[in-house]
Length: 90
Image (cartoon, rainbow, N blue to C red; front, top):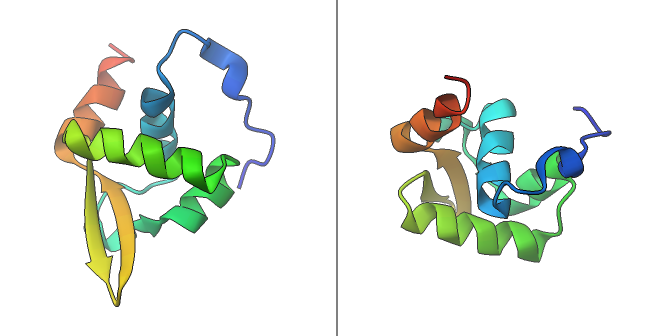
């Protein structure tokens, strides 16, 4: 895990898009690799409440999917989310 992630690299990028990129980078790209909010918060070094708000926006945009396993909500990027992240590289 890279604990020195610098979120200041692009202040013009919306917060939810930065989170989407981070989810992609940490590999939360399939339902089998879904992560709960506390793990996402740990990986991204973001407050849990901020992560929760941003994830809600990303779910509404169909860039992230939420599944519930044993009463725990877990999140991963959808195909649309992966396309959105990859579009920044083209």
